[in-house]
Image 1 (cartoon, rainbow, N blue to C red):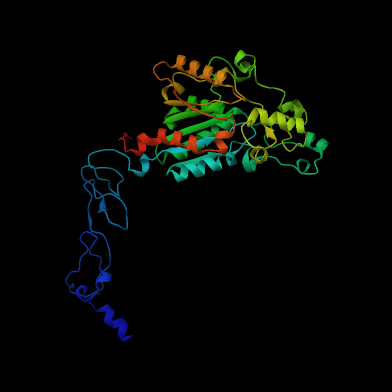
Image 2 (tube, rainbow, N blue to C red):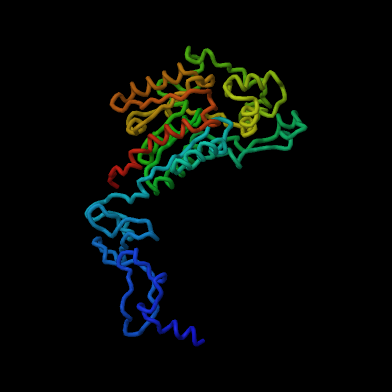
Length: 381
């Protein structure tokens, strides 16, 4: 009790140097007040010019900018004196990643790890009926019950492109609260991304297609009859088809098949430049079911909305699922639709899935797209 009482009545001048950190601006030992008390480590507080109380100077414990002033950010109001600039944290864009057919958010884990190590923020989306919302029946497990697999209902039945778009818009709205949004889609995910951009261009600061569908002149299914798709083996998935799509109301593929011919066909289309181990690992992230709705002419890219968004197309040079000829056609069609806002075109070596297995090159490309915000460009809100 005597020791406690002594501490209670000690003045600042009596405190050891370690209790008062002179490196913090304005936080030096000071004379005792009328009622002596312990000096508390704290940062000087001032009246914020924006009208808020308690703006704080920069200090080693906060890592934030000084109180409001020219070029300074207020920790209270979150803006600069005389401006409406978002805070530096709000200047960091969020990458929103949209998967392709039969896939899910899990496929982006290596890419997200690489983006995170480069200092970028990202969120991977599971479209309705994907990820933990997918159907994995007992019949799909080994030993497989092929008759049961062909008949068991799937949760994705009845899911439409409109459902996908509504879900993605909900994610974009939440991401936009934190600053700029870069929407990145792969393969069939481009259909959803394009429709979302048509509906809510205000939520997207840049849209990126990584060998992804962005229909302009034709509906997606109609492109398959075009010369650019002549090299695509449309029958590869049919080798492992389970059930009747018309009866199930969905497309079901048995990706856990042991048929050597089917596995070889899958690898040729998806990951011809990967090892067998990489291929089988990725194949086991696929889910068996996909919905049947790939949109109509109303879901093609629209100049008045989609066309306002800065856009990038990342070509995959050895892609056998969306051949380079088709990717280049989609780029040409998009540029013709919005000649004043053409694609920024990048190219990565590799097949349809290689960029997700070896994500470092793709992460660097995406990082370059985020650089204008990370460099501190002033964007009005």
